[in-house]
Amino acid sequence: MSSSIAPRLSILWSFARPHRRTLAKGLALALVASALGLATPMVTKHVLDALGSASSLTRPVATLVVLLFVGAAVSYWQWILLGALGERVVLDARESVVRRFLRATVPAITRSPTGELVTRVTSDTVLLRQAAASSFVGLINGAVMLVGSLVLMGFLDLVLLATTVAAVALVGLAFAFLMPGIAKSQQQAQEHVGRLGGVLEGTLRAIRTVKVNRAEERMTERILADARASAAFGVGAVRRESLAWTIAWSGVNLAIIAILAVGAWRVGEGRLEVSGLIAFLLYTFALMDPINELSQNVTALQSGIAAAERIRQADALPSEESAPSPGRPELPELHALKELKELEKLEELRDDVPVLELRNVTAAYGPDAEPAVRGVDLVIPRRGHTAVVGPSGAGKTTLFSLVLRFLEPTGGELLLDGRPYRDHAHADIRARLAYVEQDTPVVPGTLRDNLLLARPEATTEELLRVLDDVRLTEKVEGLEEGLDAPLATANVSGGERQRIALARALLATPDVLLLDEATAQLDGLTEAAVQECVRSRAETGAVVTIAHRLSTVVDADTIVVMEAGRVRARGRHEELLVSDTLYRDLVESLRISAVTGAPVT
Image (cartoon, rainbow, N blue to C red; front, side, top):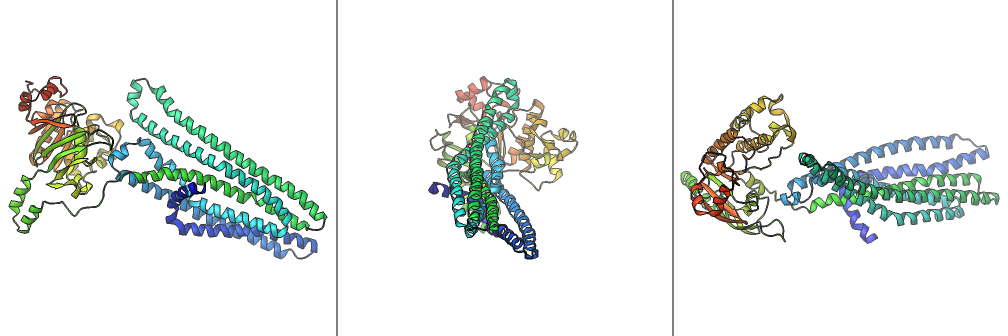
């Protein structure tokens, strides 16, 4: 058992280690308070001896008063110190987990339900408060108090000490037998709480779908199944804890009864003074405190270890490289030209180099998964509109994940400005891109917060300009707080969310604008205005769209047709209608919606 508990304790200690100096201060204060408490029965014995010998009570009583007030002050200081330390441990753990989550790769984060990840930051970190901050101090202090009490009890009477040690040993064996079961039950209970959070978060996100399908009761039962399982394991832990406490309480009380019987006999034999018996009994009554402290802290440690292990699982999430690069990388030949100050030739050469290029790229979503794209070659020029079409599962979204570096290729390479992606930091690549998702979730915060994600320094005038471009001015004017109105999925429509995301992307003025069916939820008039924005953007930069609507692709400079993870064909709309049967079938079956007046031939 010791070999298995040591690594788990080291995980918990990793949270407390940065605060070891504060822990040492807390331990010192706890030991001082314990020493004052241990001295009280001895001073009480002196009071009783003074009564028996008609000596002055002034000094022993004054000592008791001093011990009381000094002990209270030290305990007060210790509680504040360890309480504040507990909050710092929780804060540090939350900061660590949040930063790890937001720096992790997209596949690593999306692999687990969002609600389960949230419980790592909320409920799991709370369990660390006592375990990492005060349990170590409590265990050491409780052990010192227990040993100190037993030593002083031995000083008073060895026979009574033997009686007490026998009772304490039985209590210790009971705890050693029951504690592993308590730890396992608590860990399983917390795991089910995490699952509950994941299912509940996903259900609330899809509440409209749940209600339309009359699945409220079914989803309730599914969520409550984890709640009931957590409660069952929690009850199991409570039962074991109750049994442990009952044994402890009964053991101490039996010890007191035995001490009274044996002590009375020894007083009668003249081998022990009455004051010594009373002092010994005070130590016996006080023995519950260290036993109580030890058991409580062992229980807290068990919960804290389980929580620490769950929190530390976040450290296993693969992170994106965050090392900054010194400015925008350039081609070697560009650097040579710049040294010659041939600025005009520099710009001409840059224009000749594609902004993005994929060379024989293959990628999969796991080591054992089938490739989602295979051998893809694609060139994105610095200006113009490239549309990507294909049936579901063709690899279109995977293509965007590769370009955004959410996913790393298993073969081939991607290039930005002619240099491999591996030579760029993730942040540098994304600084050149803007992305509008198909579901376009609202980021928590205000309308202004959502728009400023890409360009925090943008002015209010610039915000209003891009909102006007996507026909959202009327929406902003209708909000009581304007740009500072809080946004939620419930108070903006799907089309409005898409236009907010597009306005944010346009505000960033990216080199490459990536649109994943960014007009799918727009009406005809609004879509026409948005398409005009896209055409305007394509004149000065690159626009790449995943399209399912004819209106999105008919004006594209290049249309890339994908099938089964490969590029099947490329060309303009009129050319592909003639040369590619899949593209013609997509148009004819309205998988690409014919929402414009363009003829379908």
